[in-house]
Image (cartoon, rainbow over all chains, first blue to last red; front, side, top):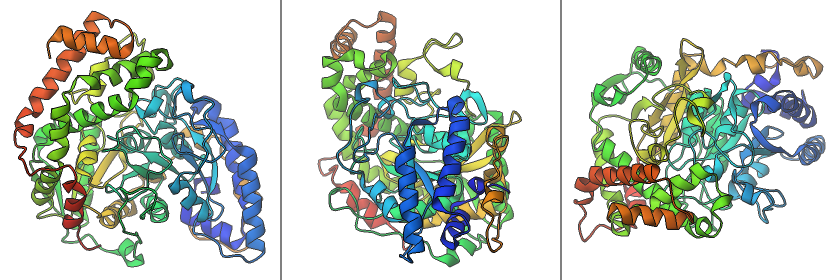
Length: 497
Length: 64
């Protein structure tokens, strides 16, 4: 590895702390790569170059002055464009909001700032986080770095694409039914849906209040845990947050998986997987088994119904959020987004309310059944690899966009393996599990009982210790290898570079 | 809700008539969706409350 931009957060942070590289140098290198690649990738909606460099200089001066350094000191990140950053525009992927400047900074961004991170700007996303393949009214959808003709997924597609292309080290995303985990799977990066209430949503666009969650994306499980450690915790201005902090014990990263237990879904649920995803999933099961894990297959209780009930809650809440502006200014929405949103108005309010009333009982039943004899549940993140953009966007010659298919839990539903966890409020970690014969990433998910993020990270990291899927970079990034590491060579050798 | 009522509601929400084939497709999918969750929704009891979910998550938390 000759490029610090390819390194993980731990390595970059160590180099920055030691002075082997300055925050300005690393930030300039990241911005240079953005400039070279992002015209094709479309991961960023706007780059805040001057602000980022000013902040880098400030951090460099602080280090020279001997000030205490945060765990993310000088590490370049970026944010999905639905988090408020005071004074900056947050479009939420909507042309209607192209001039909306935020007055305050979202709590999770403020926590990353306090930890020393540098925010390079706002990342591409689906319009109002409401399209699985990044359709928005601001610009083109983000492209998949592994094949620019393919989707990066959505709604946090820009986040996943920027990470896979080695433009940034981490990003905050949002997930109401898979919007972190689905693009993470399609782009070959890591993403976490935290337990409900773990991360403040203050300053994040609200779409479906019962299901929305903020969570980190990164390239490795350890990086994801590092970001989660910073952003997790109660927030007095978000009453839905829980009074829990998070810290990963060092020993957890080395803990053996021998004689620990995983459950996987029985074959029936896996029948819809493409051959490439099925093959990677089976390989992942074998890898865990090889690590000494005991694996059992179970029927996931009410899975399809849970999926459907989540879709109803999601569609109803998004429609309620947008119905007044939809009626007042329908042309401000892309037609496909408008049609999907309106479908949510068809569900009876009594059924929507019953769906929420049942939530506690269904969650208890799921946890008691699935996690009675296992620490975690292993399942795919997505049924297939990234489709071509011309197959999933409006006007596609081969498949006309179908408003219903993406709103509802159908066979074509991209959220089939992700959405139910938002309703249940349970944590789920998406991570890369291999590649298709065409070289496209395939993802798996590790889900757990409430507040079991540390266990998910343990299993995920153990998987990454014995696999190298997360280390592979798309040609788009490797062809652009810069010489930053040679230019800013460390005074003392650092491990892992 | 009758199909034509549902289509009218969609049109009202969108501020314009919707392509009839698309409207029919959306209405049919919504109906199919409701039918698939009906057995689950029928389990609701008078004591079920949306506010119980956060407490249930805390109760089921395992030591980290």
